[in-house]
Length: 360
Image (cartoon, rainbow, N blue to C red; front, top):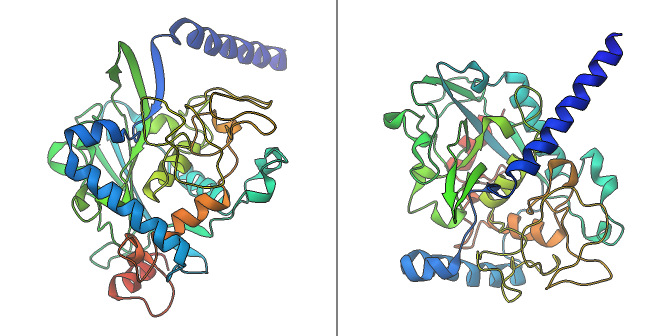
């Protein structure tokens, strides 16, 4: 009887989820808040646009010339800031949920994820191990021990992507730690937005490395508590921790696989040579070869890439080209080595040595 009851509950829950998306799918869009639009940026913020263009030109040069990019495993100290509304304990996610997320990141970035077996044979030869690992910090910026988890109960029930106010104690959030030593991840309730008459549900968002110097206090990743890690109050189909994998990809300088544009075009891509050109984002959990205006047979688009929008259970790879791009921002000699201060290899500068201590 118990088994039958549990099965019935599962069927009802599944049906509810299907009906929810069926009823509201035309009016609700689930999205990453890190989508760039270079056309809009060029019109409204030409200085910002030029920073991205200059960065890209130098980055491609540095990639081609193999400067001083580290060859070993890069370890990144992480601090998770849990900012939860005092009247909703569900937002105060557990330590175990956070630890599960860190494990997912390490599996995904080291190509140790068990679902790598689902990578289509056409892409297995270019699926890459980024040799990037994440560890919760053990030392706070002033040198005291820490668990790497920083919590605050707040009277603010929801934070705005546009205002980015979760990153400041003065606006009900938490100040980040030194972004040259730590990856700051804020977990909170992200308020939805409106775009073209649709409600936009933001799973998370991230800063890009090019803005680290100009706005260090904002550097880091923000994830809605409903899409962080596994268990707790995570919501299908984004309940396997891949939102953080995706957003940290942006933090490590990856664009969406279809490129930094909102007006879809085959002339814009993600500046990675081994990802197929793709027209727009992909949703759901495809299982067959998909083609679009930009990419045809035999292989189709790479919808299982972490930088697309498919369900968590559908994502399973970064490419070697994406790995090269991510690791290039740790170049110790190049001006585009925005995150080189986090290098954990011997011989690094003072900040890197402090960062190394942070994960001991």
